[in-house]
Each structure stands twice: as C-alpha cells, then as structure tokens.
Image (tube, rainbow, N blue to C red; front, top):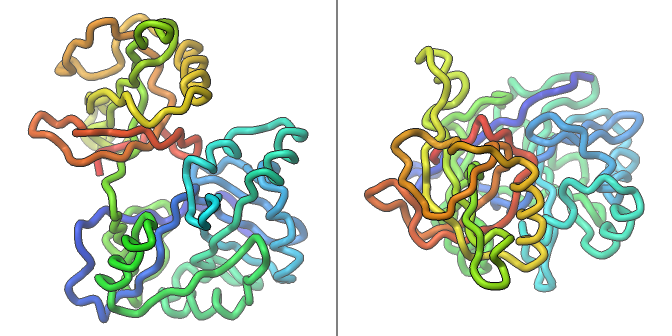
Length: 326
C-alpha cells in the first residue's frame, strides 16, 4: 500500500457553479483533514504527512470494521452539544501526546471521521478513476460506525444545499466536478469550497501584550500570509514574503490565551518577520512564523487587512510556508 500521499485541495469560490448539473456537492466539515490508511492496522496522516493515529484512539476500529485494505480521504471532526462540528472543541484534541490525557479527552471530546473519498482499494489505486466511480466505491464500503461515516453527496442543486448548511449553521459546501480525477497535493478548480462565513488560515508573526492584568500575556495576535507558495517563489527566484494582514484580538478563551502566550514567547525573535511594507504596531513583539491559526472575518479592507477578525483556533495540520491569501 502506498504511503505519504498528499490530500487534494479545493479553491475558494463565492458562489456555486452555474452549471451545477455537472457537479456534486458535499457538506464542508469544520475539522482537520486526514488520510486514513487501512490495512493490518490504522494509520492516520495529517495534511502535512504527520502520523496522528495515536491522538484519536476512538477511530482505531475503522480498519477492523471495513476488513479491507484501503486509503480514505476525510475530515476528523468534534461536535458540540447540538451536534454541530466545532473546530474550537477539536482544539483540545490537537497536538496532545500524553497517553493519559489522550485517553481522558477521547472520552470527554470524542471525534468522528467523515470519509468523502477513496484513493486505494484492494491493491488498486483509484485516484485516476472519475469522481462518480470513487464515490460509488466509497458508498459501497458501508462506513456507518459510531465514530466513522461516509456522509451523502448531492448531484446538482448546490445553491439549495449551501442555503441548508447556512440554516443549520454548518461551515459550508464543497463542489466537486463530475468526471474529475483525484490529484494528490494539488489545488485545482475541480474542487471548490463555498463557506457561509469568511475564513482564512494565517501565520502568526507577532503579538501585542494585553493591558492591565493581561500585560504579560497575548492581547492580540499579529498575523499574515505569504505572497506566493514555495513552488511559485522558486519560479520567481526569491523567497516568499510574509504579508501583514492585521491584528486579531477577539475569540480567545483565558486558557487559550495562556497557551498562545507560552507558544509565542518560546518562539521569540528580535525583528519582524513581515515584509518591509507592514505597518508599525506600538508595543509589538515578534515571533518566528511557525504557528498557523484560523480566523473568521467580515471582509478584506482596501488596505489588505482583515475587518472584524475573530480567532477560531490553531491549525497544527497546516504548513506555514503554504499559507497564502485565499
């Protein structure tokens, strides 16, 4: 069985395709991407290729339930008390390595694996098969365990499904072109993500201390994105620039502020990692651009910064070098 495949990625779109009878539509789950390698034992790999199997022991039974060799693509999600996927709840499960803590949190905040593609099945790579055939193979696997599912897809009627997700307060929809093949590691127009709220992954490059009792901890994060991917930068013959996107000062819990403070202080540096055009921030402190967070916001300003941003959580499944403006 092959290893170290990279998940196929979607491009951002504002509206469903107009010819939506040539597309399938799936719910966009607010979690972390993971490839599931099912053989003699389960192996879960993050988008970055990191082995995250041990963090989610409640998913160990997928392979035994299936009884076949396969590679699945899907999303690990944690739901809130109303059954809605919650990226913030998932935060407590990410990056944990202590077996005792993992065991406790698996009971306290269990996750579910939402499979939406099959890349390999019974000694055959399936990535060159059209989307419809891969979905038929996936649906035939009978993935309907307590902690793993293969949610339905919808042919056409993308606008109606997007409206339904908005009504149910779900993240959005992914549109997938019928007849398209799976391109590992590629971001193509064959997959389009449509969100009900604007989201952006951003690199943390600094922070501003809080005031009063929070003077020694994070008051707001200073964030940015790269002006090019590593591949684009190589073609341009220069390193990517980290473009300043503004400050994020809301959306934190006290525990998360304490965690972020420890993490940015351990990565302290003397100078700004942002490009020379970034504005000055009084009291700013800088850190190595190694942490990626997800931010919800209203819109981009004409100056290229975020309007009304709110912090949603850290993403340890994303490579900061690949974070660009969507």
